[in-house]
Image (cartoon, rainbow, N blue to C red; front, side):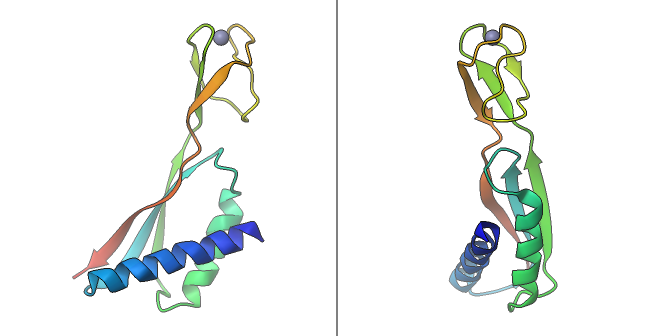
Length: 114
Ligand SMILES: [Zn+2]
């Protein structure tokens, strides 16, 4: 239940942030999720909805920005979309690749109504 505990931490973070702001009503939260973050995005979002519905933030909208993974080959410089962390370069077959995006897992913003 890794995704459920992540969802709980996100809601705690939102709660802390709303207290810090001290005003306005939360309408939505925006998450940036990379497809290779190591988190199952679907079960995370399901858990997040569930935790939100049982909190003071019931009814809040969740906006998701999904980030497609991109990797660069250290040998030939090819930029490609890997299916996993271990996808070799499609151009030269090298495994010396570096992930440049796709690991994102963050709460990017809170949508607040004054
Ligand atoms: Zn290459």
